[in-house]
Length: 297
Image 1 (tube, one colour):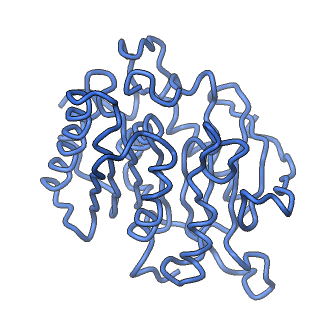
Image 2: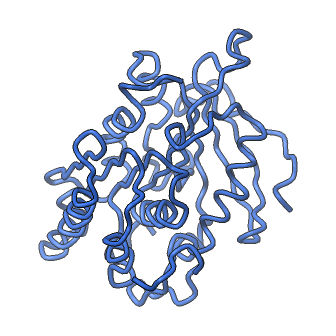
């Protein structure tokens, strides 16, 4: 394979090193947000634009007894859709805050930090596409810059302000649809950094399945991967069958690379569509699999 990855909707699916901006806390009484969610206005030198970072902190993060504790972190794309109905696409959120709060209190996962990285709205497709595409028509894709944006801007910004545990076993990345595609690309482009990978309804068909083909030659996969799709995501039988088969193909690639059931969980939900409501339903299973059981932090 000669392609060097690191250098370099369904048709209409869900259509300065960042200055020291003080965080804003979501006001108490917001019925859509559970726990401590802090908002940071964030300027990217990589993409030359502005967006919000949404940092959700676990229960008792600010307790004096925890001041030396460091926490695993999960970075999720499309941050607008994760915590708050008011900012979510079509008013439906992933319920990340409710799920994480419950699983932490039940001791199914460790106390952890979850960072929602807002998409660039009108430029979302460009930023999440590493390769040019004719369906949808994106000829000036910018996704090859996304790993740099994430690892040289977002991660240092968060680590400077919050107590983040180091190491791939404590670092996750994920998203849905195009947000899953760029998460997969980033894991391949910068191997060994993210030990937990969440791929919800990945748009593997994009760019003539180029990233799927590249995956066949990759060996340094994250320690745990959660991969999921619904059987009614595209709205047409032939298309539905193809997107499921794309996920099955990625599963075969991962199994061939040596990922057993302890490292890989695949869900193909019968009748499930392509929307935030379905991703919210599967998120408890994803979070438990990626960060549960043998955590020691």
